[in-house]
Amino acid sequence: MKITDIQTTILRLPEVHPNGDGLQDTLIVEVHTDAGITGLGEAHTVPLVLKAVIDAPVSQLTGQGLRQMLIGEDPTRVTALWEKMYHHSCTYGRRGVVVHAISAIDMALWDILGKSCEQPVHALLGGATTERLRCYASDLTPKDVPAILDLAQRHRDAGFTAMKFGWGKLGNDVRSDVKWVAAVREALGDGPDIMIDMGTPVPLEDALWLGDALAEHGVAFLEEPLSPDDLDGFARLTDRSRTPIATGEKETTRHGFRDLMERGGLRIIQPDVARCGGITETMRIAALAEARGVEVIPHCWASDILVAATAHCLASFKRPHYLEFNATDNPLKTDLLVAPIRQVDGHVQVPTGPGLGIELDRDTVERFRWTPGGD
Ligand SMILES: [Mg+2]
Image: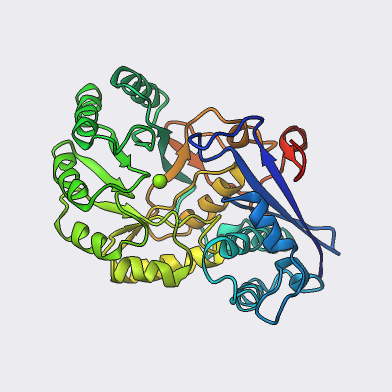
């Protein structure tokens, strides 16, 4: 089997705002083969820049676009092709958007491998340890306490036993943040897990104060309170905070995650399969984490392509923790597959079909297809 083409498609909502939902656009990748099998992948950062990384022609030995270096290759040699993509882009890559683009193609290669041997990806990763994954409702923080309470109660009524609120007003006034967390805890009782995602870095002193204050309300983890590069700050925070600290959605490769664990002292890391280097690299990162007793709770805020890829990885872990489940009403999340991935009683079934076990809804693709140079 040979790769014959790599097709990129940008999907974009009609209106996109700088302060809007992180899933206002995305890039999907289809890797075509001469066997008639097509693999599906997704990368989730800036679609037009991702597309350039895939489309670029050769510039130099270690400065190549991803498509031209893969045409004619056997797509089932997933690890070898990951290394080829990494090495032949390493002058301008190794981190950031190039690794995000590698993530999408790697995901598609695993999809092809699974389809070619009629096995779900999790079977190829060693087999699932569970058929369904506990997920947490992941949502944006509304602007006032009544709205937050209303949302929290809706998530609980929908069956979630864990929920995370993030971004929005968080970080403007950490004392008021703790007040509404306290209000949510009082309204919901001790049952559900509650997590907080700052999204925007706060001063280290504020993060230290939050780590103590949120512990009073049983917050399961505090996410991204510091800059992704502030490893010294994370080391101080993880050493002193009574609330567990989590980060990693902006990190890439096992090298970056090794630094987060070793220098930053992180005990919960959040690789995003659509950014960190795909399924191949997520499993390597998970192995590094497992050897250190660090929890891996993947970041997962893109379409159901990412949800499926993440579910296959998580299901193959020895002890899978939460699957992040975007609980907002966004058609790029809810309508992209013929059979969208739904949560029932706070759980998601691990896909069982060959490869990623998913199929694109072509009507939704056409509805949100965006062409550079268009409006
Ligand atoms: Mg986050």
